[in-house]
Image (tube, helix red, strand yellow):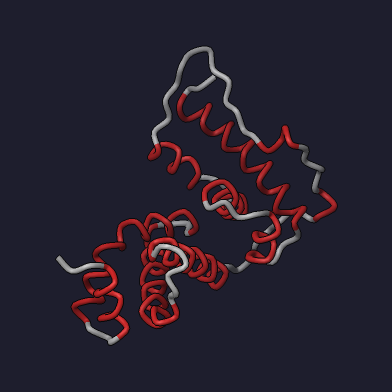
Amino acid sequence: MVNEQDIIKACIDNDPSAQKMLFEMYAARMLGVCSRYCPNIEDARDALHEGFIKVFRLLEKFRGNSSLETWMTRLMINTSIDHYKKSLKFVHYENSDDVHALNDDDEACYIETDEETTVTAQQLHDVIKELPDGYRMVFNLYAVEGFSHKEISLQLNISEGTSKSQLARARGLLKKLLKEKLNIG
């Protein structure tokens, strides 16, 4: 069996079979990453392909400070966001004037139920996909990827306050949608 380091080295040397192998190893996981940021599967596939082109072009710069999967995930997130920005005709983010201050209690989103309810990852993913684009982007970057509001503001070219507001509103809407769709609460 060929190890990851050998595949990386061969990809840097532009070996098509190694590139295919790397793509096949990570495509499904990276498509999942892209689909969190793209409004539909076609856009996610486009972002995936653009992302892999970047992976192959930039692979020689991979230093190994993190796992290859982590490095590729970051590239896919950036590519998906760039792809999204290119496809936008108009994005509405609330003005920073509309932003309300969040305290630590606002950072958590709890769904209170009278009985135990299990939400599968697929159900949650499906409901997240229903969030408006701005909410979905901020929610995924913050809650799934672990970006700070400062990093999100730089990535999406919005203020930190807007990022916090979008997250709070995303969580509120997500809670409402989960209750409606899954009869929770």
